[in-house]
Image (cartoon, rainbow, N blue to C red; front, side, top):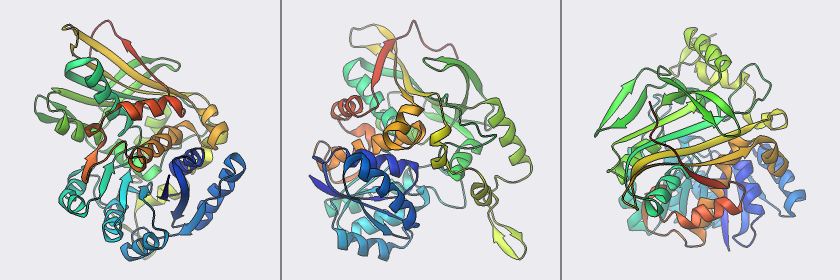
Length: 402
């Protein structure tokens, strides 16, 4: 059993803490810290009647390396689970090095002033974590995270060689709002409005944001339009599984979402550079985030399901070319009933708990900086089935026709 400190009190942090509290044989003591302590207190108050576990809560500015280091030295956790904003990753990694604590996150670092979703900033910490004898596990959410583990599971058990990989993320839920994002609005909109990139034949192929659209019939959801986007697991998967000739990432969006987003872009509300307003500098996207519904508030009204998975083509272990689809379906209302959060938070928070469990139980070990696909997928996949995200594999008639 191990002590852990979770940093971040949004929907994902709430799910992760609830699920950790449901597994006291793994997590002996859970602390939760955020810039706004009242958010931590609210999560602790939700966890207690569900699990009878007490959660310690703290106010923390995770941008302050000294303050984070001091809190780590006080609590002495085995692991920090970073579920804060991606801008804070490097500062939290610095604090972990200073205090001698293992590190884990769900999203790669990105600078405030440019939408660059790349691992090189965190991969640069490889030698420092290795020399300190510490583990840093990057991207233990669903995508990135589970999608990477899905890929290595297929490679280990079904394929001698994977040639193409398509990651499909479908949220078929309806929250009843005119416009809202199901996770942090600032991060969501930065991702969606970034130039789309996919990996093909040893190089990046760029296309304008939201310019490539395909329809796909998702089980338990139905036909949905999905758009080609860049997502950070493409970078790590093409690095650690260089045999894959093409890797693409697709995400579904409804027509109303696209219409609202186009208008917001046209009037400058998605800008991430500062503008002057009444004598003060503001970031338009950060202001937009402040007026949009808080994603954690969408749980009571969201209905429907998510369907997220990977379609891989290649040479099967039986010597035949094949196409396999591995995926999970998650119900928004079931997720809310269990943890008080909708399925988008649930599908990230549960893998965060499982990644933490892999580290504190010693199932995954090694000094240095690691991505999910570098470890044995089997124990992680077993825990997905046991803790609310069951998966299935089906063979398709052939490769995707697009």
